[in-house]
Image (tube, rainbow, N blue to C red):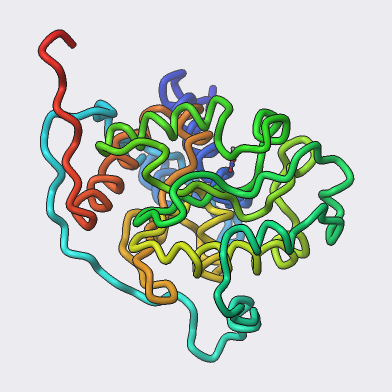
Length: 290
Ligand code: URA
């Protein structure tokens, strides 16, 4: 019997697996018990083997919404849930508060950094960019090739999409602050290693302490897991308001993920609408000619 799923289902499964991989989930098993038993009751399934055909209807349906919807932002009451257990040792608690700290001082302290391996392959340190008094800060993972070449965050393909997202919120890039967990490009765009994150995080924390944004948006699992100091998958808290050191924090998908999975744009737009409601923002009015 041909056990392959129909092509459309196959595609959906592949997309979904890529999505889980993006979230850092790499181990899967198939539980066929229910479907196999229902389909062929005469075939006993050994207890040890958990298998089940994936039903098309059981896959979560992507929300296919346009990125620039006409409806105004919905006012969603914030739901604040701390993720870090109070007893857990916090990386951020150990960072000394610097009196009268400024972004300039932080940049000077970073200097021509050689504190971790990432310095070996970098061209430019990507410190951060935007309004030093921004109410909204976006935090990504780490610079890619374009960012490494220009010394600016989110200027490549994912960056262009982030710019569109910001503009869809009725803002310009210069209104917000954009930075990353690590400030040097990881080789071949791999995820930063824990020691690299630990080394660089104090500077990120200082940046946030100086800017004092009302809202932080973590773009992708690396930023979310770093700030929240959690191993929980981003899908467990994406789109929810969380409390982080006195700021409202929301995790959403990384724009690079959206480039590969445009169907997820609707979910991100919903998250950004919550941010807009929190900041009292309205989407820009479309001109008559557009
Ligand atoms: N991806 C990131 O996480 N950060 C950037 O600056 C660019 C791409």
